[in-house]
Length: 255
Image (tube, rainbow, N blue to C red):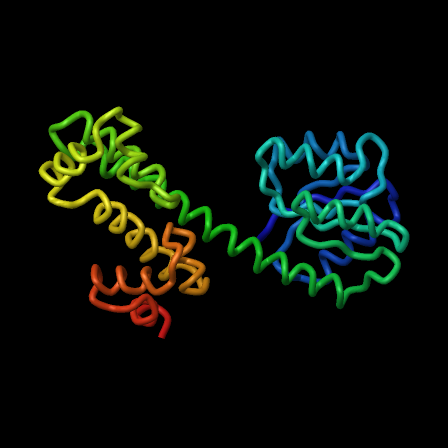
């Protein structure tokens, strides 16, 4: 179940939110509550709850300030803000700082609340998959480092492993180790049996395989995420290296 923190300075409102969480029965459990932003921040830093249901107007840091500080601390808890009719500007700011949604206190009922929790459940599941993917991708450099007997080429491999999702080039790799691009191109091919572009494309396709298997994201979105700026080129390279299109590969796991 997803851990949930309630942040509300009005006792009656906090109890109502607690009741809605329990009645909705959507896979969320309440792990604590706080009556102001500072108190909530300490609990969030300590426990990193999956979801924070937070009033916007509070003493000792309002909901916006709390959200900003939580994001600055690198904590990815999802935030749903509770607001009144005249606080839409605050709600807009909250969304800009990364809140997932907001609810109007006066119109909040079990149906709308459960719908919000179902949305948060889907968002948290997707976030969990993305974290799993990022963990997988972060292991790629460790797997491929020191793959040759040449220390400078190993530095280039480390550089490519860390940056392949961006626009890495032969020139940028050569600058990284202060080597002539033509010489690097020849040396890299001799030591790895691949051109630098081929090596980068293999890294990108390796990452794309995982995204295709683990997410429902569009093929074009996945291609862009792993570094291909052109959908057709992504599909072409994917088929060249795997023998099938991205959609064909995905259907093996999601018929």
